[in-house]
Image (cartoon, rainbow, N blue to C red; front, top):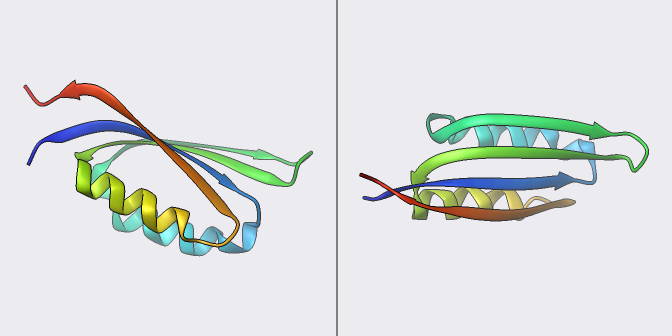
Length: 84
């Protein structure tokens, strides 16, 4: 299956979901290229960027699972780069 590069932006509005979020990310760890997290104390949110290289259905499943968590918002951006 064709692999794509994507960026998943995540905003966590309640830190109590962190354990579930990290469990999901661990489940998809083989596809994750990099991760950056920024706690924004002024607004009491955490902003996380996840870069993945995976088949589109895997990226969609990961993004969907994250977005189903309460107090978590996600947005996925796909690269136009395709497998060689």
